[in-house]
Amino acid sequence: MKKLTIRDVDVKGHRVLMRVDFNVPVKDGKVGDVTRITAAIPTIKYVLEKGGSLVLMSHLGRPKGKGYEAEFSLKPVAAKLEELLGKPVKFGADCVGAETIAQAKALKAGEIMVVENTRFYKEEEGKAKLADDATDEQKKAAKAEMKAKQKELAKKLAELGDGEIYCNDAFGSAHRAHASTAVVCQFYKKNVAGFLMEKEIDYLGKALEAPEKPFVAIIGGAKISGKIDVVTSLMSKCDAILIGGGMAYTFYKAQGFKVGNSLVEDDRVEMAKDILAQAKAKGVKLMLPIDNLAADKFDAAANTKVVGENIDDGWMALDIGPKTIALYCAEIAKAKTVVWNGPMGCFEMAPFAKGTFAVCQAVADSDSVSIIGGGDSVSAVNKSGLADKMTHISTGGGASLEFLEGKQLPGVTALTDK
Ligand code: AMP
Image: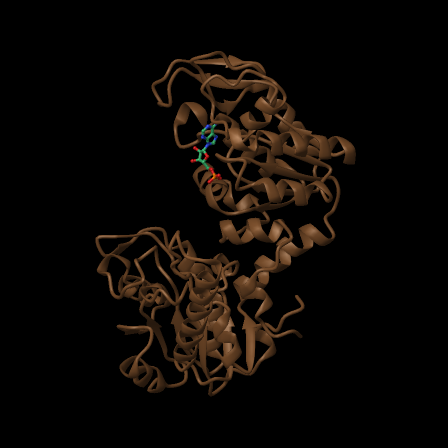
């Protein structure tokens, strides 16, 4: 880890401002899955035990950015944290403003507060609203104006801590250059990673920089469009890339197979052709399903049949087939490093979950460093009960994907170099 971590600074007597990813499911004021809250607890406890006080900020959901919306309040999350920590957690009813800052300043060593959703302010994301008919000049001006406003918000957020130590433990938001994840850093002397952030960067970084070989990537999910860059980037690092899920059928179309009603992105067929050609040129084993489980409708009660590489009219491929499962599992069994992002089929419906769970079992059984890259593959791993058999389960779907694409994450770049 080339960035400062919370271990590298003395938090004693400091009011540390910390960005966490408490973007958890909340329904009727009740928190559902607490994984993201518990993931931040080691850093929280560390700061409090070392004699610091803590102000935590986070986003939750996608409010409109026009002020308070009860549905997206972090208040129930603060209450859940209090329960999990077993100590009082104060709550600031806004993330900025005199009242919240006074509350923060009153914190004593070992005390903690959570402030309200940063996304109640549109400046958090800092996306300028651009009219379709705006000229390039006008668009440039609107973006510059929003950037200035974002900086103002970041400056206000910075006042929640004492200006000395900002800690980012929100890996799930690290791919966003938001006020609370990156811009705020310019107002702090030391910007450090929390333990969760450190762990994520270490595992993902090692996999990319010095993977033990064979290195196998399993890439699935609905669409090829979101995964093109990761496939292209991994091509120069992996020994094999196993493709599954809906994205496989755009590759099918690129090869001239019949796709029936399967999910296909027609505007990506040329891109898929290009990827296939690149893989061939580089000698990378880019594997596609050799058989599929097809259904006559997108429904758990659909009629199903196993088909080869051509999907009949009126049918859609919703999972990889048994021969592909065997082929992919054999490839995974040989791997020493595995990165997995995206399910092999519509695993939310039991009849189309076999491929995803078989791959999951194969990764668990393999003698590899296994990194599960967020999103749906994480929920599949959790559903399968094999989570403790994986080396690292990333808490950030989008962030881990961008990391694997080889992109710089603004939330990481903004941290202080060692
Ligand atoms: P993503 O967010 O891109 O990782 O996509 C995950 C979603 O892809 C899940 O909801 C799956 O149900 C869906 N998916 C996987 N395989 C298929 C398929 N063959 N056809 C349609 N959707 C699929």
